[in-house]
Amino acid sequence: MLLRTAWRRAAAAVPVAPGPTTAPTRGLRLRVVDHATQSDVPSATATAPQAESELRPLYMDVQATTPLDPRVLDAMIPYLVNYYGNPHSRTHAYGWESEAAMEHARQQVASLIGADPREIIFTSGATESNNIAIKGVARFYRSRKKHLITTQTEHKCVLDSCRSLEAEGFQVTYLPVKKSGIIDLKELESAIQPDTSLVSVMTVNNEIGVKQPIAEIGRICSSRKVYFHTDAAQAVGKIPLDVNDMKIDLMSISGHKIYGPKGVGAIYIRRRPRVRVEALQSGGGQERGMRSGTVPTPLVVGLGAACEVAQQEMEYDHKRISKLAERLTQKIMKSLPDVVMNGDPEHHYPGCINLSFAYVEGESLLMALKDVALSSGSACTSASLEPSYVLRAIGTDEDLAHSSIRFGIGRFTTEEEVDYTVEKCIHHVKRLREMSPLWEMVQDGIDLKSIKWTQH
Amino acid sequence: MAASSRAQVLDLYRAMLRESKHFSAYNYRTYAVRRIRDAFRENKNVKDPVEIQALVNKAKRDLGIIRRQVLISQMYSTDKLIIENQEKPRT
Image (cartoon, rainbow over all chains, first blue to last red; front, side, top):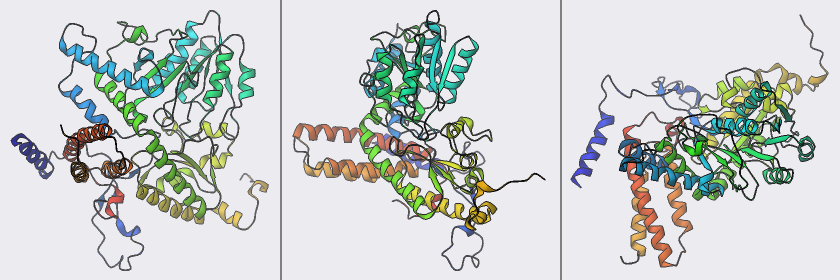
């Protein structure tokens, strides 16, 4: 009791002390001058300009990463503070308790996807898991099988792994997708050759939120005796997945997409029938020889806790996120003409909404929406000015591809945040369109496709 | 231990809500308050005493989590979100 009051007093004292060493990690500040936001206050010009407030933007980019769930952090802290043993130390209690935590986490991850704990290998993230799955399977069966199949809308790490395998002498077929973003199953069937070792199709796309028909693809692959890998980083914990029902042989899981820590992930590798994988990382033979290196106990405990929380909260979150997504799209579509939603509206994960605003440049809209953290396309391609390859693959026109914004709704997103985002988005799109000469021409009834642009 | 009475469950509910309102981060604060309300409402008609006891035990563990995480949230607090400036404090 005494200890608790002392702790409380200490906690209360810390934020009060200013001093030169305040908040070493203050993070990104947003300097906002308030005159623009108070449109309904008549005396806005009369009041002295408010002190530049430093407020943080709203976070609507959950496909890039998610905040840690407090329950996850609570599970991790003991392993960062007291139980710091190496789980591979077999001779003392520090090692044993760390190993017990690691195995418990493995069980938590396995039960989320309907797997056996022995089939879960911890890695440093979905990128490493994808590399292990694709390169590991391809190289192991190299003597007899030289062909792989994937899609054009996969994550960069999958496409890049396939490209490096092509340099090693493998053949890769990149399946196109329909306008809806979903692959054509007949094309997949006809692409499978006798020497195909692996088919890799992601479950939920990170840019447009499209859900691929995983169960059907699993059925096709198992009937043709081809291994099926899916990058389920955006899907795990959000939609129900079962590796046996869907006949999945390999699956990549990412920690920081399901409210867990960054720097950890897992790969599911089927044991019955056994999928053989050539290890990428050599060392002391940890993780059944498939991924050597000390398993980071605090991180995997976090991943396990995140999976358990996701399993409990899946239905509640899905219902809420669907409602908020419906609210966002309805409000925007009702107030603005010429807005296109990219991706199939039916086979779609609601928390990832990709909208193209015609006659508005995407970058300028993002800059205008500075109070909201958004992105156009995936984080790993946002540095370049090229429009996203995913949008190009679904056949979006160049100009619409440049004007797309991805809204992410997650477990912690509130209705107020959605309403604020919608309001600002509508306001800025209208403003940018007012300034756009293309919009003027469209309003005058000119068909933009009929214009012959001259060079001068 | 005697089965949890209605009064104990209500006390637990009030304690959890009261504690959750101290989260410094907007998203965690609103989530905790909303989730607690919805969870208690959802389980309002559970009759089986064993099940009720299990739920109460889980709630007590969660209250412990909330208390610890609220302290951490306050120790490492940062600037408010843009939306907190405009709405009433403490939704």
